[in-house]
Length: 379
Image (cartoon, rainbow, N blue to C red; front, side, top):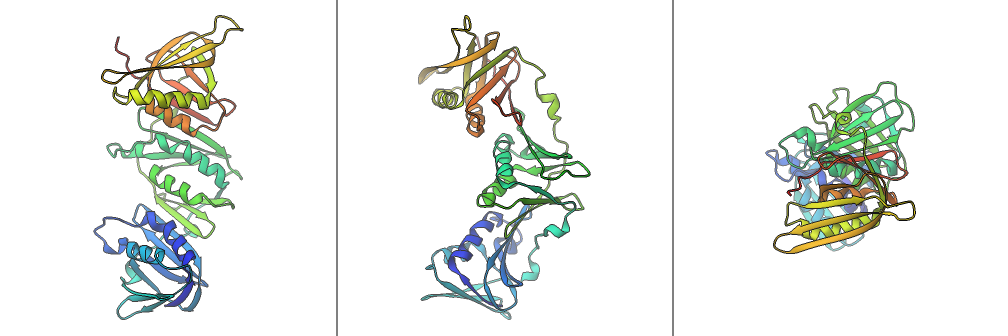
């Protein structure tokens, strides 16, 4: 293998695939990055057996070939080089790759490319589904934060993706909150299906989508154990989670007694202030909703957080309240998390009783819904 490419192109490609490199693995080759010529481009691949990424960068190919080299060392070395041309040459008998750039030179000892697990391409999948990148990124942003972090129930660390005839709906829950969001599909699909995608994989995909303008192509492998995302010059593959996801329809309350509308930014700011006191008291923040006396006098929402050692805080917000007054408690951090992902200027809080879940959604947005479980208030 003998190739040359620009330092900035190689550095960018390595940054894209970097999160898919295995940090600790019984297979040393998984700590490496695969460098392989592919027609007139250089393909970079990382695979930790949970996610795998192919990234293609422009290069001048003089001799075909492939090798795997330590990902961390290669990335740090390339990032240290000046923005000039890098020449790479592989000595096949020793599996050592020589890199030259300006006045810098290095030899990296590699492992045979045949030992590296390849990342499947879109051709290996079934029906191809197209999604607008901005809509997919927003979908991921508004759902993944609600997934569980602990591995005690692996299925809850994933996001259920329901590919319906004309929509994609995603749901994430950790048992204390639920986020669900749907977006339209560019083209209707013949056979609806659902899969569970690791939330961590979707978060990484969202990072990669950042500069994407063309539609993202999606397919599931025939074995139904991997999902493929094809972007411009990038293939992203994730393993799927096996198991039964909770029935979302059973979690969402069917009605409410109180409908409270208030400014999203003001609610978020008040929740952040309350959290300063609530974090020393199991994150409990009390929400006290009071309707207006008449149409001329608006309602209000009080946020109260109390710390036995530090003190207390009360934040009062103007609100449009329909229905009965209610006093309920929520996890302040959970409130901040959901208000952070809302795009709507106003937010609606729907409640039924102190011991019943609340619903949070953006006013004017019927594609997103968040259910938050109440916390116990000691009298």
